[in-house]
Length: 443
Length: 145
Image (cartoon, rainbow over all chains, first blue to last red):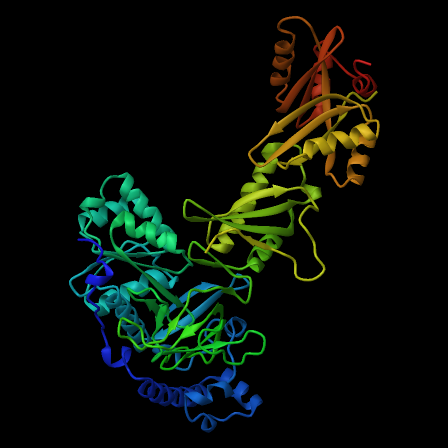
């Protein structure tokens, strides 16, 4: 099996009624769901009731999706303040699952799902898998991590909804991944784009590409370039697809790109996207870059109203060549904060600082994070100043310190870190916001 | 008399011109380098020196924004005879002291082995007790002059 050229592509649409709905019908559906959701959160979530009361907005003021601008925003900080279960709209016994991701201060950002939420999530991923040309007959090798991270389970739920075979490999052990990929005859695989490149190269090196039955890969959770796409496609002879999501909203499957690769189709019947000017939060026109903000129109467990993703992108509501009318968000151009996605893991500079401070000496809380991409894998280097008091002229002691810093940072961030000790007082201090991150990746 | 001597140690980031900066500061402040050793790792280097005036060396480097520290070491007098260093080392090993690192320099008719250990005073005792001589600070700082 192999990838399909665009001219021979046969588009499969899992839910044409929704995915190809006219704008008017979609607006009506979204309006109906929003009105219901606002009433729901006002009644069941104290945080939203207080916020709306403060703003003088009543559920009755929201008559349709056009009124969404009257509603309060939700931020990651709000999630942190109500961690872990403060934003539930249902009794806790209705929650069947939690998933999480790194938060700004080392605490997790936690999302809670009801059974229906999990089903909707699976359905959205299944739409994406269909977008990638996959059907119930396919075997999907999932090498995203399984656990609190939404990647592995999200794809798994999608495969299940589609009726395809899920191969829950989780991450790591490339040799074993390739062996199973070959032995089980996987027809598609899902992982971060950087790991996909790595796998592709490993398969090529092992000389097994011709023995694989792959036709597609689904890659997301971190930004990637067209060069990476071309590399994966040309080595493995497959089609690749970009998947987007965030655990606060549901996980992977919030949006996905089709074979035309002209932006990622947002499942706007469930996740209503707004693009807002970062300066004053007024709506941006199609094509204008702003902050992506989501409202979960039908979520039960932890519904979020106008959740600020801090991702910068633009949106296109015109119908796509694939036939879908679901709007497309473009490749992210950056963030409104200094979060970095490193090998699929969200990393905030404040986490580095908190981890260094937690060591209680040895290193100063002055640091510089440098993100590079070597052989298509993200590498995070953290330059840390040695505390003068702990300074030693013995390399063994400095190495011990370096290893200790590395272990503490790995524990705190969830990604391995290269530590570089530098002289005291050599990292630039600045009056205002210090430059803490240098990202050398070309994304 | 104090038989340990002070070594000037400088942490050097692997950056262009860093070693040059250090040597330049010492030269401008009239601090003479008697001996030096430069250990390198993939990330940084450690410059260890016996200088004419360690206190002044450290102060002038500090003024120039370079981190330096003083470390107590022992300079063993090693006669130019085969096996001298080996004999001294046997004594230290028997005395159960760990040597962290060592470097040597020639000084006229004999040589000096600079030893860094976890217990410099004990090293002096062991060496003197087994017939070896160690340099006094004055002698070491003015070696070869």
